Length: 98
Length: 199
Image (cartoon, rainbow over all chains, first blue to last red; front, side, top):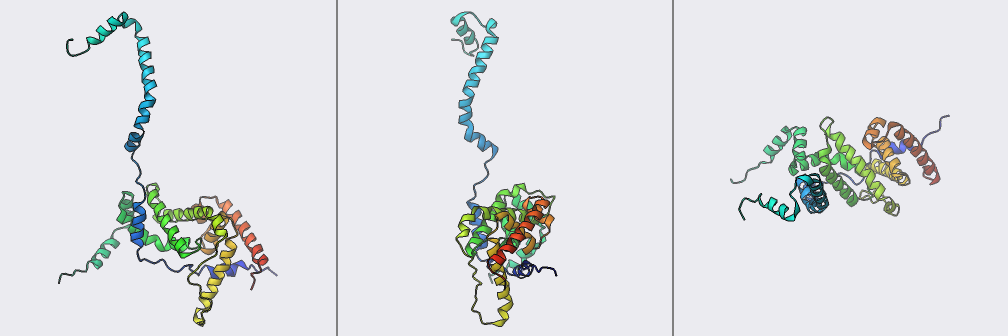
């Protein structure tokens, strides 16, 4: 004789019961809209960049310094001799005569 | 004279718009379109979430949380599958998260169903009472299962979904669903006799 599973009739009865009744519609849209209003908007890529820009600027200082050193060392032979020569060289780049 | 009933016209216009259009609008950030979709799918979400809540206020909160999850994750929906599948997937996975996060608290709480009316003398309600008692017994047994097992039994045996559908909704393999369902039913049977629940 096959053993009778007690869960089968239990599930059959239970699946017809709707716990807590039907979903009431009263105030549903208002509550949902209020909940949606509390959801923070997804930040755009530009906003994220702006938020972290000051950190990027600090992080880029050693990079810029390194790049300056690298270019200076690479073009060492093309630069004028001495500090005075260097200054006069850069002065030539100014649009106004000093 | 100055009263114009526009309800009928508005409803007609709303029903003429296909669901894909409502979804597309909601994905573009149209809150009204999302509220419309939420109204359509609310009964289905409510009936599934009701299997995991302990009280009506908790069920209201859970349903609300699921809608917020859907609103936030709406961009992840791809239109190559029916929107309903996506909604039910978010619902099932949201309910699973809810069960896991409330596991400890739930152990000390009892089911509070406002429909509870044991002293109702009306014989016409006998059928409903029998169903409610069966649900309470099932709920008692389900409470003693792991969250994962509870989700599987609810989907397979209470919502009568297939193994493949359950696997899709939960994101677990079909073999995993079958094995877990078998073990969970075995455990429920043992508990049923252990707790002396046979009539």
